[in-house]
Length: 200
Image: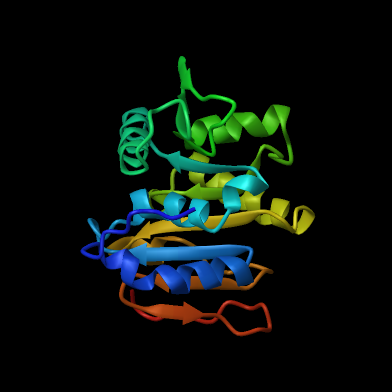
């Protein structure tokens, strides 16, 4: 899928590196300054890769208003309406259709969905946004998804961090973790052990 790419957004300078990281690793961490385009561009990068055909691209936000506003922004950039290619689900309200490929939601909604769908089979990719906030929901999801990628080799997880708070997220995992940043690229050794990440 061909998208309109804004070269002014810093993240787009690392677009190819992020794509390569997602193809190679089950988990990718993207870290950059506020305003670099991470939140709106990451789901579009996955869609452009064809990840929407592998299942929905789930994209979490810590708050309901953020989930709805990001859905509206991404839908506008893709030239569609909310509820079509891009949808959202928050407490007491849902706008998701049969053709929805990108689904915004609160992290609490995704956590709740693990009760009825333990392997989250409706999703082929999951973006955890604002993971540096380290809420209980985020911490539970990080632990849950760490176990899930051992069961589902087809699942891709992208963790989005604010640059100045990236050290608040633990990076050790049994799976190799890549870091793709708007101004820096870092990949851990093939041994699968996370190397000490450089300053963000």
